[in-house]
Length: 297
Image 1 (tube, helix red, strand yellow):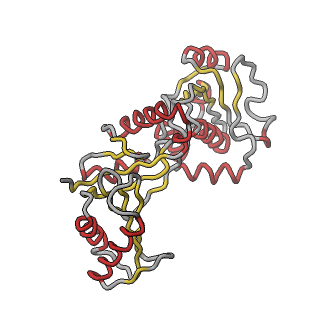
Image 2: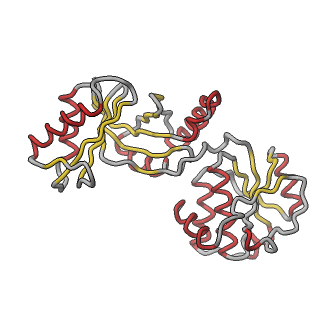
């Protein structure tokens, strides 16, 4: 018997990697465990995380910053029994102000009944108990039911960034440009986009900038974004030669910078290095950079 809360963790892109799928899943599991201090259980294209109920919301918010996760739900796990599923769905409706609702069922394993049958039966039960109406398009309340080894009942899907798990695609050094806020934001976004593609990011900043620049609260918050999403600790270097030396010792074979097509003559235009130069923002304009970065905050 079961009657406990759990976090459902969904992932998408990494499931398309064929023979490498197990490696991608294991890296994602490692990254989740680092944040949640607990290792999820695998089940049919999902991970199920069991932690103390009082930590559920806080942990879910942190997991939203783990690349590779497409969405999360805090759910009640119940046995594969229609009466128990109906009772939990009714419980989720209690205390909510709504006139219309719908039941959305999904089976990740072929257990119990077909999804449409589950939706009709549980929907009829909620109508009987509450007097509310079913509305399939734009209801006031949507109750989700996922069926695998157990049933999971919830009302919210928290959207995440997807992408690939950090660390699956090797190490990349990142130069943090700090001459002004725009250049700092470009550097931060360049690092985030490389992490979303699965790279370990080793951020570097110049010692002259560290000494001369007084950072605002927003600047510090931007720098912390890299850490929140899984970047390594910032490394200080005096020049590009020292960055290259240290980066190679860290097994970085590429160097990411925040240059765009609009500032190819700006920062880092004359970098001389044996490393591959990556410019993930090359096609972005200033507005797109601002909006993209806002999505990560």
